[in-house]
Length: 105
Image (cartoon, rainbow, N blue to C red; front, side, top):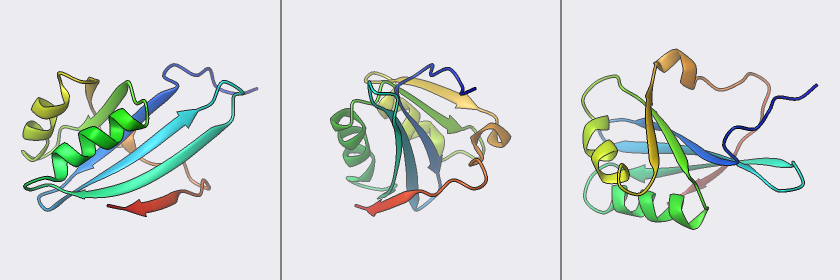
């Protein structure tokens, strides 16, 4: 028995001082799920490029850890374009055994 899909196109963000790692979970209408991981600089044009990439992938919801202080400007930038959730760091951990395709911006 599979899990019920709540958000067909969502992203988890890991925000650091120098970079932002975005992991997208995309569910097609057929039910097939794919993952994409991409890294962005957290300074200058990186956050805008992140927002544009999320929009181009049809992302509706994003979740990010509220640890540290680096998440705040990213939250403010994304807040008007996506549903942004702040979550406990333990809830953002990857599920063991799943492979992820990586792209670098």
